[in-house]
Length: 343
Image (cartoon, rainbow, N blue to C red; front, side, top):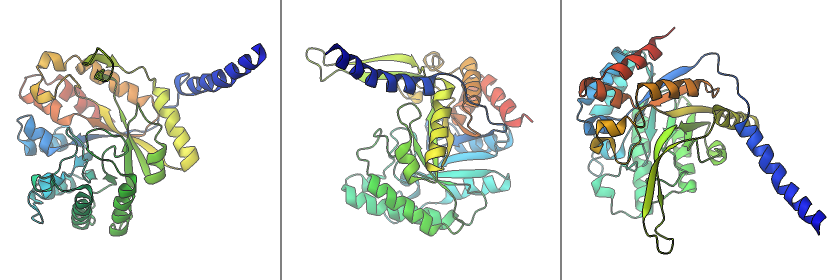
């Protein structure tokens, strides 16, 4: 009996040990050259009280950003059913072209920035199938409009579509339909990115579906946990959390994805703005600085360089501009300028 217990113990312990040794011990080789980019959301910039065009132009002209990942929000593009408004996106794409920059459009229902699923008012009460029909139609409108632009680098279909967060439904079969539609429409056969959580996923499903995998990478966040289902507790708790995952955790996962699926992994969302108890728009600056300040900004970038990723998009360009213009604190903006203009 003791021998059986010992063997069972070994069969459990050895795989756990190997898992932790592979993902948590040692280092991966940094990429020889890293392409840095920035995420941008017109909607987010406006909610910060900014002139979004000035913020976008500052990224291109002052920071000299050459790679952008831009939210092509459904509710902004189709504010009324079958009534399309492309003026703002046309301007963003044209400005990128004029500055020799590349864009990754995020298209679909879930296109980043909370509440993430930016559904137009007229489509909110549609059922799932009706919404999906409309989503395919707006994707077709977007791809056909911008597929001939030299500024379009890849397509990102949805934002973390396999991570059930921020939307009322997730549907892998529908995601396949979206991917197939983009492939069929894009005459230049650009790669399609499927993004997933860097901390809470092994990226396997994303790798099966996309041509590339896009991962998030966060270091310091507000973590909340619901205890409402537990007897006699019925409340939520929250605290600031420093994620314990080392750089090798991300790099080794990327190596596995490349070996097994032949797919490249890039970082599409590196934390470079606060993640606090409430949204930025409602958070005092002192609270924001608990999860993002100049020291944390530098740390996150240096950490990301150690993962082995050769393409990294920072999350927070609108906030850097806000804290410079509205709060009189240009230090992070200047550090970003150093990053994008270093040779």
